[in-house]
Length: 396
Ligand code: IVH
Image (spheres, rainbow, N blue to C red):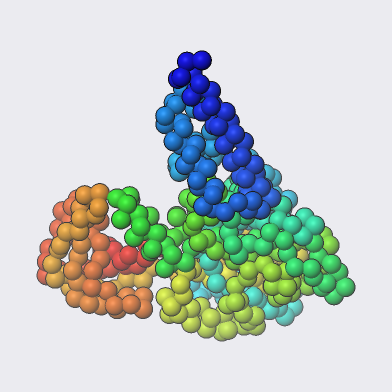
């Protein structure tokens, strides 16, 4: 037998064997949440396959697992219909609108007394999780509210998402089949660290934690998702197995099941309480290591929620209060240039230090040169700076 032919035959056999193994491990890892081998061994298999594919390009198979790894592949997700539509909330920005909400609820309830669950509004990606027989069955994005993308394989890699919930007896009922809704997000320090690494590798930095979280759950291979420290917090619970009476009970049950919830929700009884909560977090939100974009108010009693019902695409029993971006005014001392690893040049404003959203700011981005020309910005000018969802302050 000719020498080359013999090598090729051996290579083909090994490639087939490697693909068979990798597929088995992938299936166990992504679909059954089991690690059959260590990451190190798994990577060695991938590496060996990569070397063989490089040396024998003709033998490269179209179903090679390497086509999935490392690339920024846009996966075609299966669409799943939500059992209950995923609603959004009406937004408000002022005290008057909060007062209107209280009035509307009171009228809707025929003057009944009501309590309000006042919660932080996490700025992330909305998600619905279904558990069947206590096991995580499906994780679906909001999509258009009626159907969303099946991102179960990606969500299984998030450490705080229980793949199996605790055995819970809640007032005599074993709860095993239910749906929860929540938000996927990234902590600010994790986001900043990922951006440092992007920069070190000559790659573009991500705009803000929310976009990065959204891109991560939707675009990447589950193996890559696993490397991003995504977090989850849940704020909604449905089940046919049990009738709960309030949002506070929803939280209690989710905690017992082992589903992560926010420790910051508070039961309030008056507009004053709500306004105090809003004011407190307007300041304190900058001490949190994750981003919030407002506060959510929910009528606590589920009986009352049902009376109030839903109009258009938002429930009448809940509302969001959004914080507007904070700005500060200061003097522009000089303009410097920052050169990224890719060679991209960004003009930076060196500022007279000023307090903005809880931290002292002495530098802010000036975006690009067109921005400077357009606004005729010069050293010595007074500028307004803002910290939006961007983490890094900007001149506006
Ligand atoms: S309740 C019907 N609670 O904000 C219940 N939503 O603008 C709807 N969000 O769609 C959701 N934190 O993606 C709720 N504590 C919280 C929330 C929260 C963040 C998101 C969620 C929602 C959007 C509404």
